[in-house]
Image (cartoon, rainbow over all chains, first blue to last red; front, top):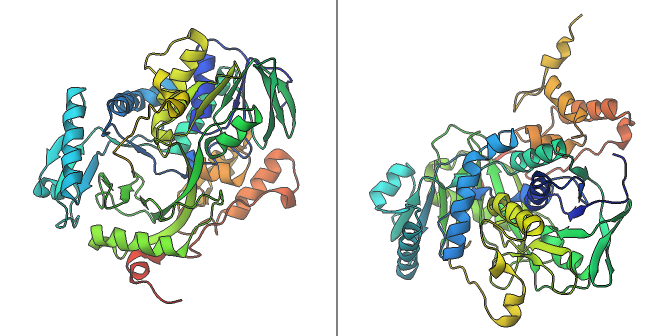
Amino acid sequence: MTWKTTAEAVVIGGGINGASVAYNLAKLGMKDVVVVEKNTVCSGSTGRCGAGIRAQWGTEMNCRFGLACVEKFEQLSDELGMDVGLNQSGYLMVAYQDHEYEQLQKNVALQNSLGYMTKIVSREEAKEICPGVAVDDAVGFTFNQRDGHADPFLTTFAYQEAGKRMGVTFHKHTEVTGVKVHNGKAAGVVTTRGEIDAPIVINAAGPYSQFVAKMAGVDIPNYSERHEIIITEPVEPGVCPPMLMSFSGNYYLQQRPHGSIIGGCSPEGHPADYTLGATWDFLEHMSRVFTKLLPRAKGIRVVRQWSGLYNMTPDRQPIICETDNVKGFFLSCGYSGHGFMFGPVTGEALAQHIVLGKSDIPIDMLHYRRFAEGKLLIEPAVV
Amino acid sequence: MEDKSKDIIVCRCEEVTMGEVREWIAKGYDTFDELKRLLRVGMGPCQGRGCREIIMREIARGTGRPMASVDPGTFRPPVKPVKLGVLAKGGDN
């Protein structure tokens, strides 16, 4: 790939949010957008994620984002010209504690009021949705068939391919080592392969966003947590049809259309050391959770385990904004485990904000100044 | 003569053909891990034992680089597939 030393906009990070904002900038008419990725596209948090897409949230903002994302994913393969592997098999939320079930019921009322028709379902109905599930110790369930999952690789590559057709350049194995700032304005990036001058620089560096922000002299309170995950060999469909998810149970499990079953949980201690190892403790713990929920899965083999980093903020909601002290330097980070599902919508919203000065879905409340002002947007429904 | 090698199954676990591998290498997906993420090569029960070297050779050929410089990609645990029931029982080792 030839190296050009100027661009209209440089996007740092080739995950879903970087690829999505780059594609959407080109769609809105930008001729010369460059994405720089230190490894390869979709090799970081997006490619390591649990792949879920849901609008079963507990805050109005996230329900609106979630619903916009479900609607976006429903037509994304057509828009990008490549199958993104969407599978709307529903999320079955499982509550084990009374206060948790009360919260889920409140969430359902909120979702319904916004047009997302999640249902409270009985134990018997839950067992019909997920045959063989062992949930006699649970107290309540909610279900929405429109939730589901998509393939993070295919989705991100679909953005890359569609972006390339519209003139977006992707540089892989290109690490940003500096952000250039002149007179309080973004001026470009310094990378391991050379410099690129650009008046717009977008930080979509996922788990490393706080370090990239610092390169421009911007302090954000983000940090990264390692989460682990396992996947089984492919088996016949129907072993785990919906995404099974529980906040108090601390798990999520889903079966890919291809037959493999993916399972993960939130780690104890939330290791925050930026390594991407896989541990025996997690493998054993997750296998116990898995076989307790789905006893008939005991004979299914685990083929792979890995980990990925959640880029966290104090209220577990993303930061999407232009920075106060560096004009033209934008942040799209801190997705706190939900970057894949939100990426198609947040990438579009940020591109609209940059090109048009406003976005279809409001993002003003996602400025990082909310932390200094104490206006946190606490979301109760997260694993 | 028509090139029949394009229909050869390179990854038997995921039934990926030589033609697909060559097509995507030409589009710039020229590392093993990119091809794995795109086509699922090496993600099946054999974890790439059958296809990794063949694909690395194709990457070398497609990019004009020596085979020795082609990154074999990430190897992930477990070394061989293990039943959930066995793992759930745990052990002291």
